[in-house]
Image (tube, rainbow, N blue to C red):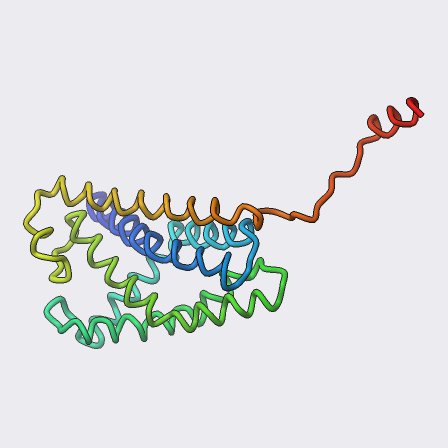
Length: 209
């Protein structure tokens, strides 16, 4: 594989990973700190884990597998939207059967672990449809592949404007994540932790007494 093809593969990987993180992280993060009642740090660990491994290749495996699956089931850009969504929903269920338990493996509470995995599996059809749509839209906005799923008004825009829109959506996703954790400050960290006095502090108090 020459350098040009390697660059194309890497660019596509970054675009696909960013597309998936932009949609999945705000949704799952909000559920983790509300419905699952995870602490902010455990939720953040799960989001960072998914993001890190996504950029290290997991998202590429997801998007490549999706492309292979689409070819196998003859899902093209010209297919109707219902068939596209149905395919992405089923594909996400199959993928998350393996990935969801890994993502929440660091959660020490077995109940919260089960809730996280179970909810991700229950949401897999929705996550698959949204994630698949995001991948197609981001590929179009960044100039990798045209997609009929992008509204005509956006399709007609200059490449620089479309790339700027992709950057704006990504930044908005990060801002939403910051807002989610700012909204639940009492859940961040171990609120029951009390710092033990140091040896110096203890001796100082004893001397005063």
